[in-house]
Image 1 (cartoon, one colour):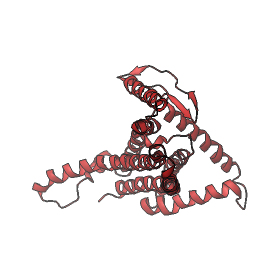
Image 2 (cartoon, one colour):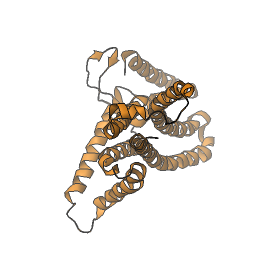
Image 3 (tube, helix red, strand yellow):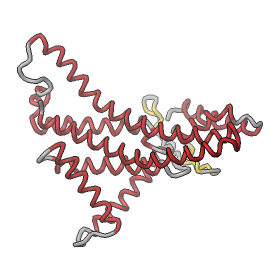
Image 4 (cartoon, one colour):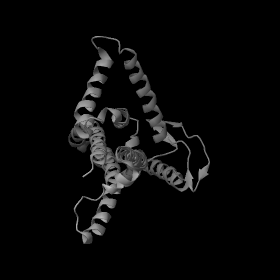
Length: 285
């Protein structure tokens, strides 16, 4: 996050706190919501604030300091290493039990219903990347639902990075299967009239970049929207008072339970579409 954006978040938080002291809570609900979903150099956990920023230099106007979303991704990475390495160490068990059993179900599902179905015989070669993508997004989504935590996948920079990696994997798969010339030659279907070639070339090149863009925006928008709706319902209590309790709490709880499903579905959709794009790149038109 750049310094102006950091200052804006801090000023918004200070303004919301000052307004709350004067009883003007309804006018600053938006500030509280935006402060919660935006990235920040301060990690808020209930009434406590934990400074997690590691100051790093600014490169080309981009502040590379560690913020709360980066901190959450570190936590997710540590949890994945703990659970997955622990499950791998028990691979000698004839009958999987506990955590290994649960993880194995997910791995087999991604292998059989995503990788092999979308890519074909070469799907197992891309399984490590697909599993890494699925588990990372899934854990980020779920941890973001813990009260006091934050959702890293609600940050468009995070989803854009995931989409760029997906784009590079798709292009690498096509180049590996057909070579550089053959891969880009497959952008155009065979047998096109000469006058239609320029039009189709523009359409196919745009489509090549629209696919990762759609992956980026879909994941970002779905995870951000859920949190905004939950916070909006809870904020009704501070705007309308106790009269809003019978309405806001059940609605917020319903959306929260729905977000548990959305967290899994969005991780699956991102992984499934990535596998589909890899399969299209390998098999061509």
